Amino acid sequence: MNRETTNRIRFVIEDVIPPILRDSRLFKSMASLAWGDHISHLARFRERAPFLSAEEYEQLYRQHPRVHEGTDNSEACIRKITAEIRGISVCDVGCGTGALLKRIRSANPTLKRLAGVDFAIDDASAIDGVEYVAAKIEELPFSDGEFDTVVCTHVIEHILDYRRAISELRRIARQRVIIVVPREREYRYTFNPHFNFFPYTHSFLRAMHPVPERHECVDIGRDIFYREDKS
Image (tube, rainbow, N blue to C red; front, side):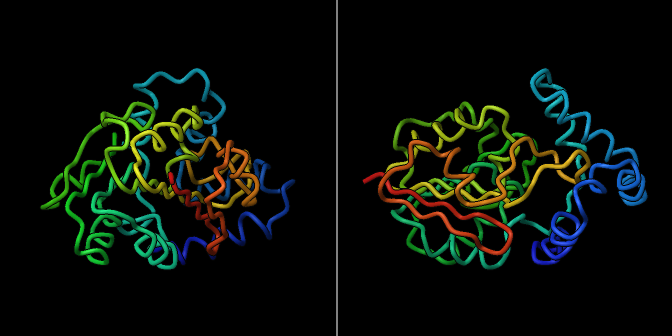
């Protein structure tokens, strides 16, 4: 299933169904018909967020079903990201299958270095020309300003200490930081293991505080695209 399809489903689930029903046991029962007990596991996962061990955190992500084909990004987001790459080195933090890295390389053939970071999905390690590193976003094993452009899509919503994660993205970027998050509201029962929810662009800008003068934050479909420049 691609992002465009799930966005249409999300519109109905998040915006059409009223909150009193979205948080009800009836919705949980209906959702369980598709995902079984995993719906309950996700709800408990969010409830216990401040107390989760590293092992519990990693185990859920390794067991969580893949919903999208290759990438969580819509085609519109991919086109925007590939057009905004600067410099000759790129790091995709939370690279997953590496599908976005492939598109970035295809659209920017002059790139000299491509790196991908993930902690639960290592598919990108099999891609020729990509340096794969198994690590968490809160502690990236790179030096300050090591990459011209740092990309991070559909990751911040999963991170409890998201300010530390954002700080790391900014630290390793020399020229540009690009972040994409889903535009969504929080409900008790959802199909995603998200901790953070950004229903509006200004909701995400609060997470990015302090926001530099040279930045862009716009809606692309049901996602929020954010870009900031270091100079």
